[in-house]
Structure formats: C-alpha cells, structure tokens
Image (cartoon, rainbow, N blue to C red; front, top):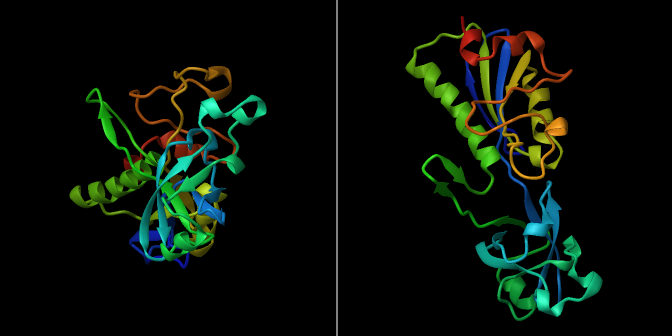
Length: 240
C-alpha cells in the first residue's frame, strides 16, 4: 500500500495481531526553487539538511512541469570576491539553467516550489568502497528489500505481521515515519539508516563514538531503543 504522501509499504501476514515494522526512508536532502530573478537566475531554499557550502559548481536536475531541466549551481568566482563576500550563504548561491530571463525559465516549466537534486555521480573506489548521491536512503531501501527477499528464499513463516516501510519526509523532520506509524500502529519497529565513519578527519570520537567502515553494521543505543530487541541483535533471531 501507499499513503497519500508517497510512503510505500509491503505487508507480510497482514491479519496477524502483532505488527513489526522494518523501515528505511525513501527521500533525500535536496533544494527547492525559492525565487526566480528577472535575469533568470534561480534562488533556492533547503529541503532537509542540505550543505550549502558544497553547492557551487554542482550540476543539478530541476523537476519542473515539463520534465527534468539541467542546471548548475553558481557563486561568484574566487578572484571576483573580496572581504566578507568570500563567505558562501544560501542566499548567495543560484542555479543557472541557461535562460536569458525569468520568462524563459517559466517556458521551461520551472516554478517556485519545484524540487532540485544533485546529478548522481555513483562510482566504486578501490573495488571495496562506493560513493554516490543519497546513499542513506538507497542503502536503507536495499536493506529492507533484502529482508523480504531472504524471508521468501528461506521459506520463513513469521508469527507476526511484517510491514516493510519505505517512508518519505524523513529528511524534513521525521514526518513520514510518524504519519505511517499512526496508520499502521506497530508494536515495534526496526529502523535502518546510515551513520558516520568517525575515523575520517576532524571527527571527535569522544562525541561521535568509534565507528569505522568495514566492521559491520552499527547498532543504536539510546533511551528510545528497545533493550530486549537490541539484545537479539539480528532480525533472524526474532523469527525463532
């Protein structure tokens, strides 16, 4: 099923009394059109926790009324900036779609509120690592689909209803997970996402913990985490 906002749910054993949610988020941080200048430059606003400092020179896709329009983030070149003008702000970056004015932008089907994402650049590094856009939602979605695949391949019969949830709006305030939780009303939820490798430069392990790529999945410890479920460690043990 899907809800009105676009969250997708796959259901196994829908008639069981007890409900378990296995969730990942489907959305990604992005930008949206805030204002179009008379000269055809597009000012933006954040959709989620987007880092504006990496935006200049990034290629983007604008999702308009007439399909995807290509663009690029611009910012005054370094040799044209002096003093305080060197600082990058959300208000100082604009998207250029190659239009001569706002009228031409409108003819492209671009309006205030339309979404903007970076162009993907997926690649594999040294055969064992990969980089790309929005890997948090992509990897999370892959993990919950793997759960469904393995349950079917191993012919496991669950003693509860399993709701495999790919929720939207996580990046803009956790609203997607809250809305679908109110609809499903699960007894417990297993949530998948990514975390930070704290062995990268300028990360304080005393604050962020000791987490390193290649050492397996990370488990969250917090007052909101169900300790008995956490003690089981793996999803397969719940099925016994």
